[in-house]
Image (cartoon, rainbow, N blue to C red; front, side, top):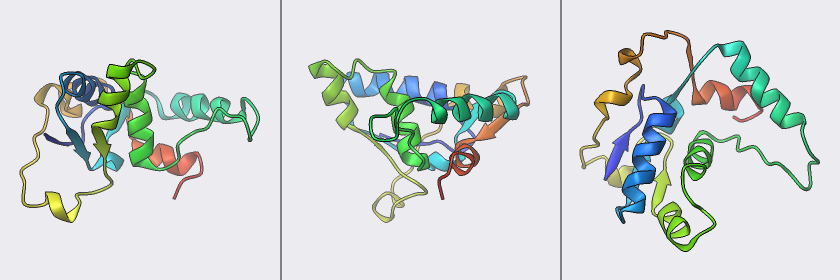
Length: 137
């Protein structure tokens, strides 16, 4: 299954992908950089700034600064990743920046209920902007 995350809410895409992965399906998420997080831009940046200042550089917590790894880390929180079925499900989820060449011929599906246009809250920010703010490329 291929999911196009363009203008989709990160949490809703993540729960859908986690459920499918737990059922045994292989899930590929493309266009991770254009996935969105709802909320005020300042509060989202402040949350990640505080998270970056916590801990020690060598011991963590480690923040993923690439959009595909950022999305995969968000999905990991929705899985029982310390148990066998969670480890297996987490390995079956792949996140991609853009659309890879081998997947261009296949048609990705979008989630109707996860689209940002359905939400009355107009405050949101893309994963790409969050990653740039915390020091990614």
